[in-house]
Image (cartoon, rainbow, N blue to C red; front, side):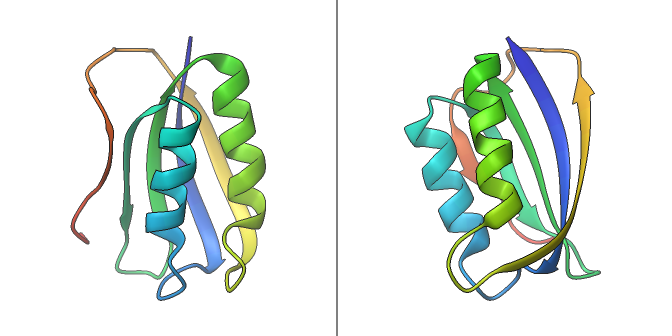
Length: 92
């Protein structure tokens, strides 16, 4: 099991990044959340099988078709098992 906290920079708001990330995470069987930040980045926390988390990170580097990802800050965290689904949260 693996848990990551990710900050995604670039043109990632207004391009369906959150919804697409949530869909991809759910397809991979991951739990966690994704939200927009006031500074234009997207923040997400994902937890699950290490291989699936790595697959989501690979997707995050590209994002959906209209996104232009310029940076990804990834930090591994302790697995908590606190989530039951992958959710899109309201903006901060």
